[in-house]
Image (tube, rainbow, N blue to C red; front, side, top):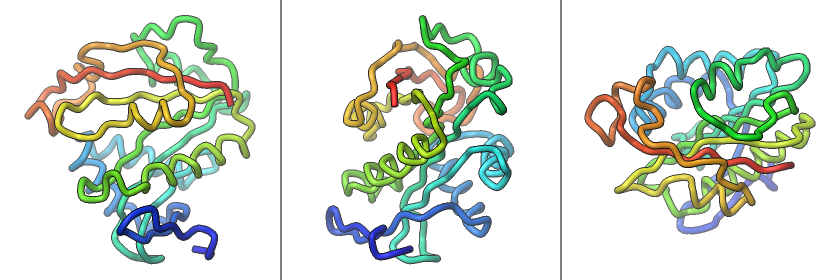
Length: 199
């Protein structure tokens, strides 16, 4: 981590850096504990990060090789990578109105922060890096989903802080996709909002 990547926005000093393969197990553990997701599916996203596909995972950590405090993954679709997965797979069955899936799009896939690290500016710095990555890879717009959580800070505040607008609020958004929701003790019944903005 270079000096300009260090932050102290509260009591925690941390740096932001790009993912390394040695981060994999820590990320998968944090992802599963905070979000609840099939570990194999999560691992596939990290495979994308390690591939040539325009996908990056940013890590917040107090040291170069220390405990991961949070992470965020962003993928960019373009004419070489947009093969219908965004509309047909990622948002399958979700009415996104006039959203144009064929434009180069940054998908703000997942952002996770340890519960004891919430409200410390960690997610904000991760988002800045993720949006910078989107611009560097010529995304024209960005889209992402905020999972509504009753007893936790959720990402709606971040989407709105960074100028995203809601495309729609959806009840039981993950109903057929997650059977290990940490908030529902099994099949997910949570609502979500899909957000969008031009870049």
